Length: 300
Image 1 (cartoon, rainbow, N blue to C red):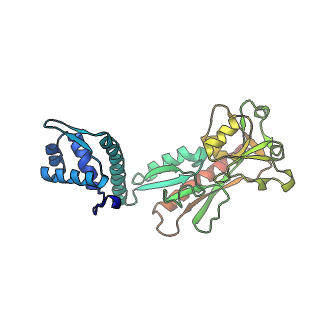
Image 2 (cartoon, rainbow, N blue to C red):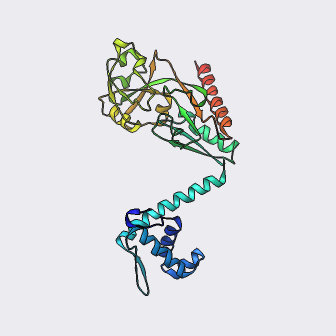
Image 3 (cartoon, rainbow, N blue to C red):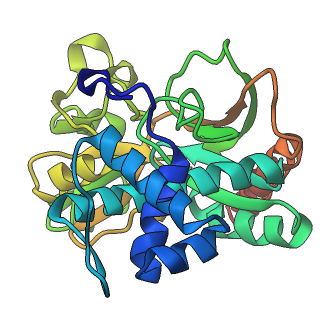
């Protein structure tokens, strides 16, 4: 691993497990018992690790074993690496018992809790995890999830996808903004303000307004940056209803935006090697959005 020191052997997980076992048990003898090897093998493995890293890791006396300064640092990293390796093995061996659904800003908005509850009831054999990742594909392209919820203007051709519903647009304002006292705001009024805009993962583009009637823009980097800019009072934001449902903050008020087209909500997934629970997740999301739309229509 470290050719600069002339070592032919690289770092292995067994080296790290040996170091952790020695420190946790407090002796080479007990570490050998825990690992199921001889005490001599423990000594050789530790020596090999110190050779690879080029540093001494343990102070050893007749009664105690204590990590050196370098050993403390290596030990902390070793625990993280071993935990990640164990998680990798667990995920690989459990197959499809866990479903990861990614999103950049919001999951299913005010449907999120109901989606989780119904999934747990209907599919107890498949653990559901919602993963937030600040990318245009909500972590799907990065391999961090099995499906992703997409609201931005993304090219869907590379992915299998399904339209699950639509969400009304809202204006996000500082709570002391004069508009916060109103019931709603018109789209053309937003053009008179500075708009907080996230080009990477946001759902809003300047194409909502005619070319000669577009608002001034302040670009942000993620949802937290976007919220901070709005709470400061220097910007307003335009966002789907899901953001208003999942990101209620002191100092932020949301009001419905009139005269603006709703935001389509898609689920996307890989064409090849897709999760067996994909279609069940899509069906549940569609059902929740359809019921919400029907309830809204009846109330009107």
